[in-house]
Length: 153
Image (cartoon, rainbow, N blue to C red; front, side, top):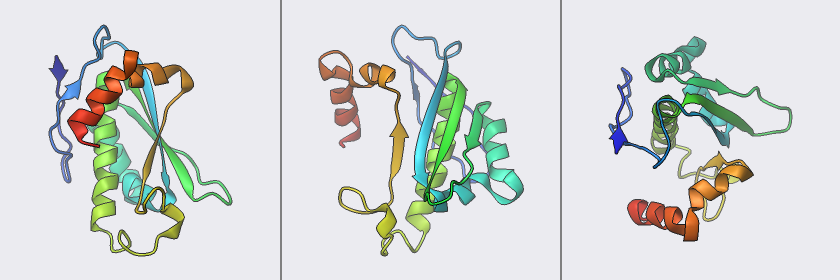
């Protein structure tokens, strides 16, 4: 079973079905997903005067927030929360924005030493609470195997 959502105007994320967790109700379950990323990508998510993040909030219906910058840190947290279906729509827009920036920027293949992790290049880190790891891995690692199979990661 899958759900789909409306697209944002402008640089819309591609239409991808939203997976529905067996036994879950994406129209009633509240979730929160946090991404840790380099501060240089945050401006594109916020937009001039907050226009892009406002559009993403309106288009998805999810609460999308970016943490304030911290002295000495090059990373910021993007939090997307709300009903599961709305969070998936908001997350799709945010990740599409970040990936578009990464692919189109001239710094993608240049030094960028602060972002080199496991082979180099920009990265997005998904912050997962300990209590949610089981849902991602699955019994006997079945969910993780399915993710690897479908994404070829």
